[in-house]
Length: 95
Image 1: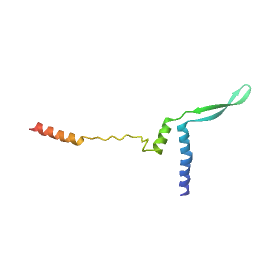
Image 2: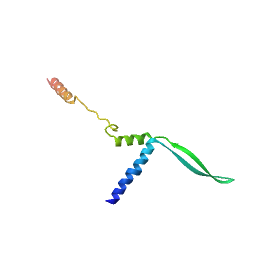
Image 3: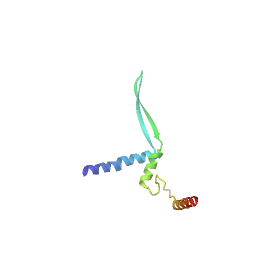
Image 4: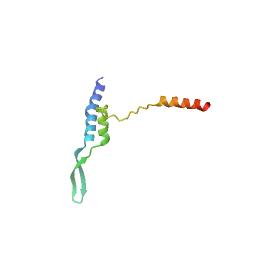
């Protein structure tokens, strides 16, 4: 039971926060080492991770599914009417 609660807490805090961060985009710093004749030096680059529309779509559809549902519902009408018309046509053809 405690193990499951720990997993649930990790899912909510770590995974959800990371997904939201990815959906919004973020800035980060990357440090690399460069070798040269003069020795090794550390280079720091400031980078930007743009927002990810798939992550945003996932967050929205799961947090507010009634507003951001991923599927469309299509209602077909007139099938009963079509069946009746086909039956009448078949009767007419038989006569």
